[in-house]
Length: 162
Image: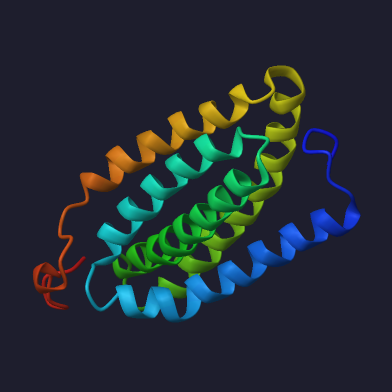
């Protein structure tokens, strides 16, 4: 609020916009795109969008902040559910629920720690914190590229998956 000079109403509007965008992306947008891309592709696309998002978050211009927020909703909304789906595909039927449960628990812990560490880093590094986040997510993007199989026709059949 201080950095952007926003009041409570502006901040509330921002978080409302973010929430609505996340709902739209994780609902109809993800459903549509998952017909054309595999989970690996959606993880790669989502991580790349998050890289771009954090560059935009370093701005103090409201239009750029909202554009970055849109990229955040798209990136996170495509990447995280797709990552969870990839994880569950690599477990047997007996452990798929456990895998997703552990992944959600670790994701929740990462969200909490990420906010705490991000706040600490922002107090120390300012806008450079966003560039650091972009760097880390660039590594995720590179890793996601190594997953391969980006088109639905390339999906492994149920008999060949692990």
